[in-house]
Image 1 (cartoon, rainbow, N blue to C red):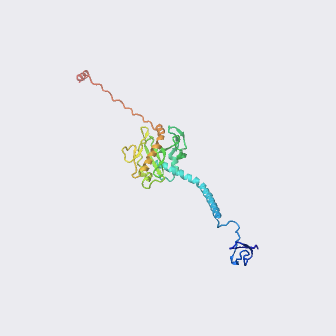
Image 2: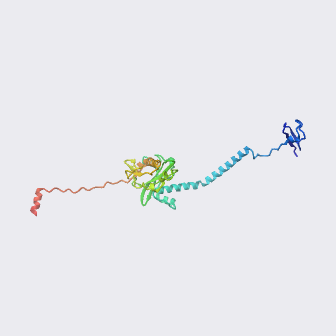
Image 3: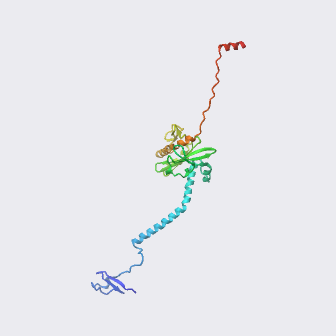
Amino acid sequence: MAAKKYVCKVCGYVHEGNDAPGVCPLCKAGASEFEAVKAPKKGLDTNSDIYAILYSVVVVVIVAFLLAGVSSALKPKQDANVELDKKKQILASLNIKDQADAASVYANVIKADPIVNAEGNVVAQEGGFAVANEEVNDANLPLYLAEVDGAKKYIIPMTGNGLWGGIWGYLALNDDCNTIYGVYFSHASETPGLGAEIASDKFQSRFPGREVYRDGNVALTVVKKVTDDAVEVNAISGATITCNGVNDMLQRKLAPYKAYLSANAPVVEPVAIEPAAIVEPATAEAEAQEKVEE
């Protein structure tokens, strides 16, 4: 059995043995002044700061790996949910809502998702759905072509900024490429009851029938007081900044599509007007002849 160690609290003398000495050989202090020295524990001291730090690091690493694994396992489902929500929003701009199987309805209604550019050219025949918001520019404009009740519709995606965060939406045009068939707007964090009203049917129902372009420019505007029903939409009272954001979004995002829509708009043939029959005025001689015949 290993000898124990005792230290003198007066002078620091260390004694090894089974018991403390009766008197310190250096300072002559009594046995009561000796204190047993505890043997150091093997391994880590669980009460030390180093142990606490190491324990925290290990726990954080394990939790991080678990979260990464869960996220990786759920990512396909998360991506599928994001895609489905986007399809529902596009359908909502066509006034098609609350569908039990929105994915199937989308596949039947949306006929193509080309990518066009501001010059009016088709960059790609498909792939518009996969274009992220930050990738949209004048050379990369996603578009959706739909068919509702046998009529062609053009759906334009839009993004902008509201009062507190981002706003976005989709605007569907009739086959004349100019009048609105329906719209869908949403937001990230607008003021409840005010700016958030852009996502309500009450506000969105003000858009159908309005014209988008006039004289080669975007004429559609959101205003406080409507003076031209053909191109102006009444804003939401008390949500000026959010409505200004919607108006700015419409102006910026609809303009690049003008060339493509103009090129695809149906040509209206002028109506031919038959000239009226020209009646020659009766001469005095003809009138006299008519009287003789009578």
